[in-house]
Image (tube, rainbow, N blue to C red; front, side):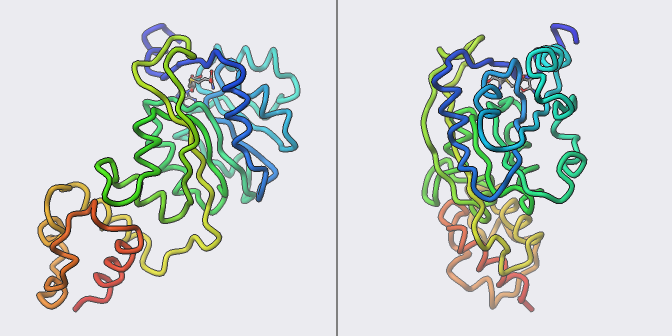
Length: 257
Ligand code: SAH
């Protein structure tokens, strides 16, 4: 891989053993026997994850890192997957079994990793690791907050969120421009929604795409009845709606007309 191509891999290697251990310790070990680490790099986290009573798989796109892992983590052997996580079909490694996801994630694709996790939520009871701090906060914030958005609502519909701790740029090589945040998502016991799930995703996205508008304006294209639009919920802006309110809104739209 050329130096230029590498620039896009979001490589900021963690250079602090105690933080690496703390991140590995976010695994609760409840509800799964296997773990997938995304973007192991030179294995600083992997070292601590493989000490746990779980079967560890890692997925890494950078050939140099993969070579290093193959030479230094002989026990991982066939469980080192040399692929782009965004293009990877999880059933290749896991079939239909459950697994936890962990990592010091490549920040440039962190949102896409979260969306991929949501798509595969039936198999992923737990998700933890490090993001750019702002993204970690956004995922965990509740309604009313300035950073509450699509990611917050969609994640919190299915997972309990915990923002665990902040990590300064100085513990990475090279240091990123921003602070980092470690979080844990724990899938809710009942994670099926009492409304059409596809419509829920669509409504949340439409509402936040025009975040400053009231729902009456941002949901115009849904051709809602005057009767429904008279409901005061449509006077609100998306950041004022809890996850529960978004579910109720979706149900109301579903049964309109
Ligand atoms: N976990 C290591 C490295 C973190 S940097 C540490 O803490 O030191 C992010 C890692 O993700 C890099 O190793 C990078 O090569 C890898 N990566 C970037 N994009 C990826 C992708 N699409 N699929 C899999 N790995 C990716």
